[in-house]
Image 1: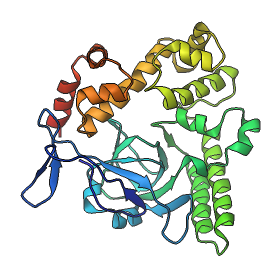
Image 2: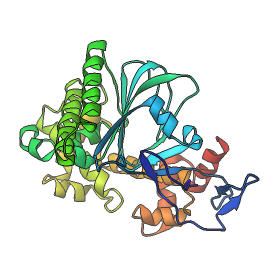
Image 3: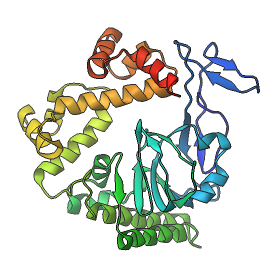
Image 4: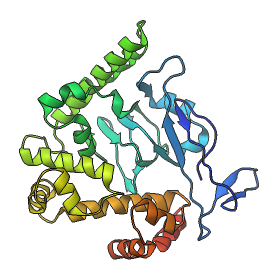
Amino acid sequence: MVVRGSCVPWQCRADNASPPWEKPTADGKFQTFCESGCVNSIIELDFRPPSDARLEVEVLSISELRKRMPPAHHHQWLRAHFYRLYAVQSGHTQPVVDFVQQDLGPGDWMLVHPGQVLQYDFRQPWSGQLVVFQREALWEERLAHAQQVPLSAQLALAQGCVWRLTPPQHERMMHCVHSLHADMNLDRSLAVRNELLRLQLTAAFLRLMAWPRQEVPVPTSAAHQAYARFILLLEAQFAQHHQVAYYANQLGMHDKTLGRVIRSQAGPTMSAKKCIAQRLLLEAKRLLAHTTQPVQAIAITLGFDDPSNFVKFFRQHMGVSPLRFRQGVASAG
């Protein structure tokens, strides 16, 4: 179910679904049922800048976020169409991002990408900061020559990444966040504020990337740069192109060369074919668990000409059919 209404600082996306999928509950609200009869719920969030200006970045504390959020958002699944960077200052929390539970404590920073599905954990008190922004807010074009790998490609490698910073590193990042917040409220024109925000935001991420984590290797080699471009291309084209040859051709290399690049960066058991399959499976699981789309529609969305091929692909990798996976998620709550 996509919850209707409005929320701050983001816009809830209205769903065009209509009965028979929706059924009223006792309190007059609606639940959405998939073809198997299970209940799925998700809240889609579009980026909406602060009402007083068309700013491209917003910074707010977790306590302020909870005050702004409708109560339903505290425990339901949220899919935003913008980036969310979380910093934990005190306490502990265990949010779930795309079926993976993260364990976050003081000094931890987590990046959630557009399209990823998040469930907050407010079972115990925790405090921190949240930075929301769109890709356009990065000062990327002017860094392209110096960085060689676009910052957006480096962020793509950081999908699902948690940085566990030392106290000095955490303090420096918090200084970046406070500077962003100050620039939001600067008594200057909108254009000047947005330019300052782009600079501050880009500086913050360059700083994060300078502190290597196991999940995000430092981009120092040509192989890493090629791998980053492959991941960025895959993120954009996975639903339209399933063949390794397409990605190798787009990157200007042979299939076997792409395979060597991926093995050198992602491990000896990885391949381009596995990367493509994993990305398709992740999107399939998102759609099965968090939407009411029929399996046939999901197959078409993911670029399968024949739904039976999608069912075969999903069963081969997951061990169960798409419908049984959906029922299992619903049974698990």
